[in-house]
Length: 285
Length: 293
View (cartoon, rainbow over the protein chains, first blue to last red):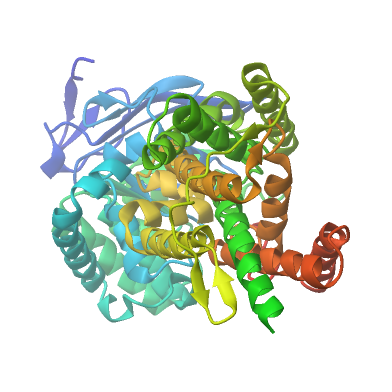
């Protein structure tokens, strides 16, 4: 696929076809993610339609919208958990069409879940090492033939996992069972596990759900820290508007499966369609 | 007292065979969330593979066992690929019926090749001397069964808990979708599971053939169903559960054969299963399944 013309519009660039906001430092770089006219139907029901978005390689992007707008469906489309009925997804310029979810992860997309889905019977360390899995290609045969190198590799994996845990001050919990951790720590562990797969874009599905204001503040700091340390893009679904407005550089608003607005936090705050979507839907749960 | 020790040893040996087979059921259930009712027939194929390679092709016993293990591993992986993989998203009942179909297919193909007559299993372990401790004599094959099963179980436990593939298996068993999103290929993990289960079945077939001496196309059915019982008994999906369930089942069966009645032994075995499930529906080491909402 040939590269898109970036159209200069004042101080920011608006890539075709998305119209999304890509921060200045990411201009003229291959976007980490380009969703082009994505759509999916379940039976006769159109869950998401004509979803286009571009995310820069170090952008913090937000995906917001009322309940049932199709935000998690978009995440499922981006990870090929659902295969889109229409449209195409490009990761660093490569299409993900026909790839399995595991392959899409290996191409650089990692995610967390709205309701925590850790491997709760595994230790904290093993959860992270499962994430490291795709960095160290291993099958039964190589496990048998590389018995000697194996120990060394395992040691490296342990070190890398501990390093990642340390990033969230969790290395002291390494040998606890993941399911036994307190809620906030489980949420952090999910992010560490996702980071272990060396993503280029990290998708966070409601990372602040169930957190108190001080935990939310810490999370905001952590998201920025992740972006700065790992140099990756972060895209988050979130209902906490304060969080979204303060850390996201570009925001995409979804309603009834369609994009109703894209822009900077300031633009979104002032957008009448967005305000309508949030306040004019009192009958919807 | 001597009768008791002898019965206990025989029970442990029988239980080891059940445990090896039960591991195949429980691992496949835990990871692919399906009941592979063709698993018992893999034992039958394994036993015939030994007969063909040792009796007909005159291979040495050890090589025959290796051939049998290779054939079973290939068979297990092939069955999974052809029969179960296309049904990954189908209803569990569909998969169950398919598994029963595969089971009949294997039995009938075996009948076509080997006929309905029973065939003698080669005497592989006769060269191993019998161990005599006072008045108790322990056959060499029994010692080998116990020893090898113990080694295999220890190796499997280490493999599941400490290797990367083992961890991937546990991750897939807990949450397929999340595992896939962490870059683990679920299909490949399931293939490995079937291969391991079938290798264990092949080993079991050698011990089973050695102690029952005759093989026929329906040979796999009874140990298959008993091992499945053992897996449920120990808590299906649980690897230590399958080991414990298999050993207990073998000991209970042997004890009732020795002290009560040979005819009643199966009734007693299944009776105990019913009793255990009434008291603890998840089996001895099974975990309570909490439905995800």
